[in-house]
Amino acid sequence: MKTKILLALLLTRVGVVNAQSVPPNETDLHASYCIEVNNSYVDYSRTALSTLNNEPPSAVKDEDLKAILAASNAINANLKKLQLYLVPRLAYIDRLGLLGASGAATDDLARIRSATSMCEDKCPAPNTSEGMDGYTKCVSDCAALPDLASIQKKLKSCSELDWLPF
Image (cartoon, rainbow, N blue to C red; front, side, top):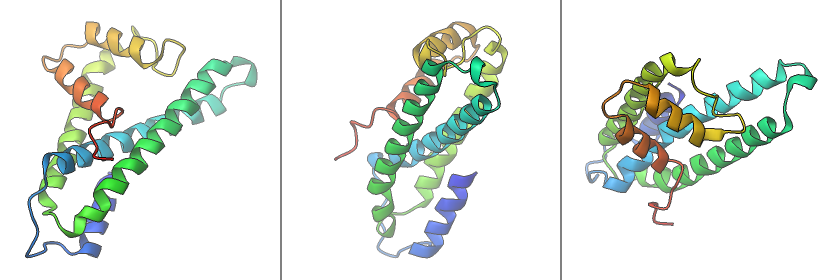
């Protein structure tokens, strides 16, 4: 939701439609998708950190805290890199396609959450020592979502930004 508000503000600031705007390219669309995904991850890491803050100090494992902080730093770095690519281009590209890509990310995340909600009791939390890989494998085995592997591949590409031009 915050991303859509931010994007809407950027659209009005830059101008809704530039008469000379060009359609977004694949990298632009991918960046828009991944900004939404990484914003969702930022929210998740904040929730995980606040959950740990509410625990008694003796219940908090150092490796869990370190894993959450490392993941949070990586997410913030990815988000900044994506924004550094996309925001300057907003003055030149048609932004309606970007909203579609952002919406697709929101839909994918909602579908994943819905399908995996039944797996929460069966799978280790991604912020434990088993990490995201253990969680992803468990969810893949548990969730009933025919295109789960495709969605997971798209989400993984939002953490590995080697497709960006810089």
